[in-house]
Length: 257
Image (cartoon, rainbow, N blue to C red; front, side, top):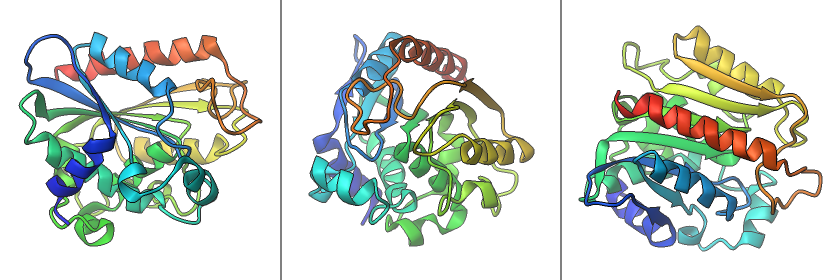
């Protein structure tokens, strides 16, 4: 499938937020976790709008005919739709933005929570094999390096079979530019832990990428989601506000790049 075609399907179930005016605006693509497109992500979309960005909260499940229950039973358990496969959604949305008059497809920020972070990371790590592996025939890994100016990874899944720790983000595209990376990790994360995300981020730093990390020692997974489906998650409204502020900072830093 071509990226623009799959991107159009993804857009049908996604929600677009835009600042006042006609644009074109830089765009923040927001990728949800394995539980699906939950309401707390709308707060981050509003942060992006206040920063002068259009924001798209991408629904990766509806176009695949997956319900919230399907997601919890099959995606959250790792039975289907691993991050590598879902990374095709990133390539597709980049292609779709090219046809949207309100969007500046040359200035994109990617933000992913948990499974969404995994998907973003694998999209970079797969390199020149992207089109063959993700099923998007025109998936262009160079667009991830030239059009995406910044990436924010919030408690991203980075254990096996995530690729970043072993491959980095440019193993076969040496010399290509990469985005600035911002990350948020919880020290009491009961789902992805903190050691695997830290290992992946350390790999990116060794490869020369700019990586900024916020570590909340007492934060669980989904600390910013007041409707988290995991009963072990502890909602922290204070950290939710802090992470929104951090997101705004990241958007401001990368907007003029």
